[in-house]
Length: 364
Image 1 (cartoon, one colour):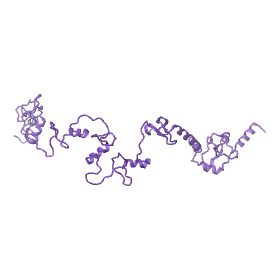
Image 2 (cartoon, rainbow, N blue to C red):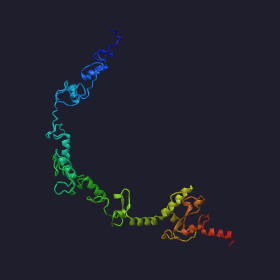
Image 3 (spheres, helix red, strand yellow):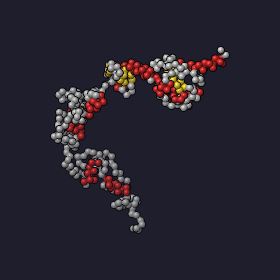
Image 4 (cartoon, rainbow, N blue to C red):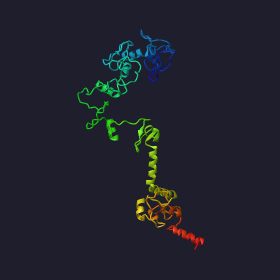
C-alpha cells in the first residue's frame, strides 16, 4: 500500500478509514460494547434482554451484561470475578439486611434509626415527653434525654457523667439542671448564665416570652403586653414602658428641653431661608443678657414655661424673613409676648415700633 494512503475498515462493505485493530471508529466502538464487530447494520442494543450472568435478572446494558457485571469485567477481567474484600467493611449486623456497615456494625439506615430512637429497628418517632433522667423535667431531644443529658451521653457515654473518660476533672455550671461546662472558674457559671449575670445582674434571669405580663421599666407596675408601647424589636412587638409613662415622659421632655427645641426650630428656619446659622447655647445667651428682655427692659422669669406670655423667647435683631442670620450677634432674650408684638420690625424695641406708627397716624 502506498504510504500516503490510509487503510480502510476491514469489515466487508465498510469503506471508512481504519482507526484501531483494522476497524473504523464505529466498528471499534461496537466491539468494545458488544464484543463483536458485526455487520454494518448491526444494532448493539437489544431491548428487553437481561444480563447473561446466571442468576442476575438486571437488564443488560453493555456486552450482554448489566452495569454491575460490566464494571467487574472492566476492573477485574471477568464479569463473575469476586470483589476484593475490604477488611474495614462488613455486612450490617441486623438480620436480613445485606447492606454494608457504616458505623457501629450497622448500615446507614439502621444507624440513623439508632441515633433517633435508640434502637436500630425502631420505627416512627417517639412521642415527645420529658427527660428520662430522674429529677430532670426538661423536654427530651433524642434517646429519651434532654439536650444537656444527651450531650453528656454523646461526649462521655453516660447521661449522668461528671468526669470525662480521660480522667481530667470537668466542672459544670453551678446552676441546678444546667449541664453545661464552666466558662470561668471564678464564678462557676457556664457562658449562658455568665452572660445573663453580666447583662441582667442575675444568673438565673429568664428572657420574657410573648404574651407574658411584665413590669413597666419606669413605674414598675406589672402590665399586660397590650398596655405597653409598640416596639418593632421588643418581645412580642412591645416595648418595656407602658403608654401612661410614655405620655408623661414626652410631656416632661418637651417642657425640660423647650429651650433646645426653640433654638433648633429657629436654626431650621434659617437653613430653609438660606441664611447663615450656627448652633447656639441658650445658657450662654441667657448669661450675656442677664435675663433682661431686650425689648421692654424687664426681667424675664425663667420659671415660666411656654405658652405663658411672659415666658422667655429668642428674638432676632434682624428678622430671618428680612435676611437676618441665626448667630450669636443677631439674637437676644425677650418675653414671648414682646417678641410676638414686635413681629418682623427692624426697631431695637417695641416702643420704637409704636412711636413710628403714632407718627404715621398723626397722633400727638
